[in-house]
Image 1 (spheres, each protein chain N blue to C red):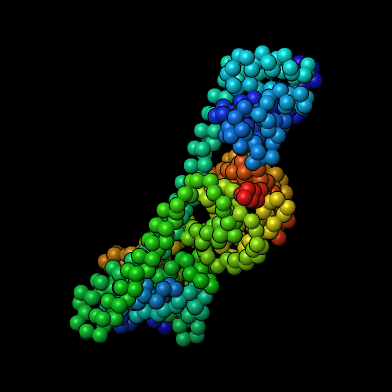
Image 2 (cartoon, rainbow over the protein chains, first blue to last red):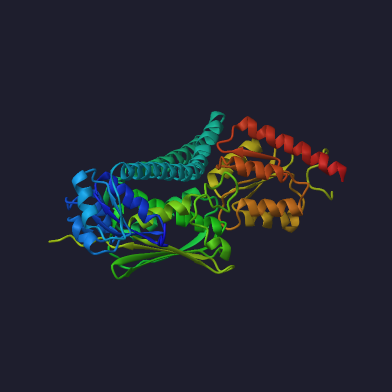
Length: 346
Length: 143
């Protein structure tokens, strides 16, 4: 075929489940530009997602097609009438993909999304594993105080010493209770899976708190330069995963020693967060690959190589951007830009 | 007595240094060890441990070191590297709350005598310290 463009401009017609799945897939494909999404229902999930991503939307497919900005029109409405309408009105150079071929593409997009969800889950489990060993450490120390002192109580007869040991045992028990309570509060956070307005400054603080648990050496100086930033519309869990990953990476890069600088600022309609470490930095040829799936410089079994890939995925899905900068010997800086939550219409 | 306080003829079972930042953990270890007849020296972080082992009147007077990993200032890994380089004949037992298989394997392959995870069973602790003392004696007799 002649003249296949380098960047494929696509219009999606039908923004239900299928259209939304395709939209997600296309936004992650570097050579695909989405010229627009159309659906008769203005509240169709794909239309809402497209609006969040700043992509052109319309409730009338003909309007989009008339703009003549697409090389390919993918019709996932499954409606034969729509297909003939599209074939009639499409610009001459544009192709229409509909019927079973569009259905097949939709199925593939859904499969891709399922796999991606599994990857996110795997990465989450990995960070839970790291977190668990950190928590074990926190609990094992007071636990040892309890078991150890109890053993010594066995053959202790002096009342004042017995009282002293008991006091220490009670304090250690209370410490463990505090740790467990903190974990429970985290696990049972309300609506962590629901979309809501998230305060990025709080998310960063929470990420640091969790990363402290998850890393071996907690001699990192944390400097925060938070601005008064508007909230982000998103899922608390996903945003926490993004920043926990970036903070953990930074701490690991510094091998537990150095300065971690976290800052937030408003940037037009976006909120910008930067995570800066004072570690050894990222070599230039790795800098272009760190977001690639399965790219890792960590030891076998220590990293899945999916962390930053998933981070970028989540950020892009929110219509945001992530960039990394580094000079060898001078640490690395990750900048995340996320669209500020639109103010509620009064 | 060039190679330490503890010789076969010396009274007591030997001297152990406990390096751990938690007061109550050091207390449990101290109680367990002193009741078993050991002399105990304490340090609340790696730097203090290095200072203690290097201070004049303690020079080479330690037989075994019990060392935590996660500590402020100088952490356990740094302290252990120093002990191993400067005092290769003093066995080091890691006593940590971190059940980290990879770290344990790494440390053991680098010559750490044993890796114990808190809470440590009293008998297990004493058996490990006794075995480390044996090794310490054997190492010194070779010199």
